[in-house]
Structure formats: structure tokens, C-alpha cells
Image 1 (cartoon, rainbow, N blue to C red):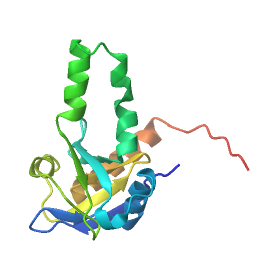
Image 2: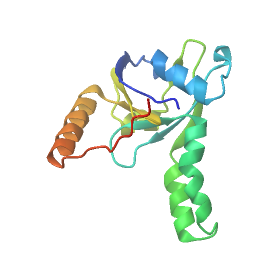
Image 3: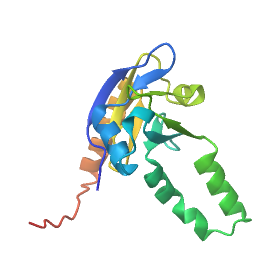
Length: 158
């Protein structure tokens, strides 16, 4: 399974374009069944519910994220709320031939992006942050994980 790993920083240009880090582009391409990179790699962008950042998903992972929506009655308030929260602020875009994406203005405002942006791998997805906010979030997450003594049960298959 492809995972988005690591932290990278790139410059946001005056037209709102930023280069997606090469390892993340490769992951998106893999998750898009080897789409031809010369025509762009699809990515779903949406504002985070919890943090001042942008979430980025492959189309396949976003469809998986949305799958629980089918468990609700299509005409219920719960379905409408979930659908609104998931889809209303989402954008389907493609990288250009140079691996750049244009960040929609409303998403860039939500994440308070100006000059530099930080890409943070989150496993199935990645996030786009203002660099100082990203570092604060990383420190908070580490501290909270340590304070709560969070551990992962692992099984190593060799």
C-alpha cells in the first residue's frame, strides 16, 4: 500500500501554484493506477475540519473516505450533514506537467498560506500547512502522544 511519508517545504508562487513533492506525486500516480504524468495526476483537496490546513487525497482514498455515507438514508439530515461537510469544500484538481497544483483561494485562505507551504505526510493522505503552524501541530501531536502514552500494537511479518 502506498503511503504519504515525510515533511517537505515548497514555495507558493504569485499565481497560487505550488509544486507537490516528488514522492507525493509518485504516490498519487500509483494510487491513480499509473496515470500518465504528462497529463497530470488527480488529487482531491479539501479544508480540514479540525486544523487550519488543506487535506489532499488521491481519488481512490477519497472515495474510501466517503464510503460510510452510503450507510445513511439518502434523504436524512445525517446524510445531508455528512455530504455537506465532506464535499462542499472539496476540489478535484490535477497537477500540471511540472507537478504543480493551483491552490483554490478559499483553501489557501483557510490554511493562511502566503509564501512557503509545508507538505506533511499522513499515511493515506497528506496535508498542506503554513510552515510555522505545521511545526506547532507536529510538536503538539508528539507531546500529546507522549503524555497519553500512545503506542501501536505491531505485528512484524518477516
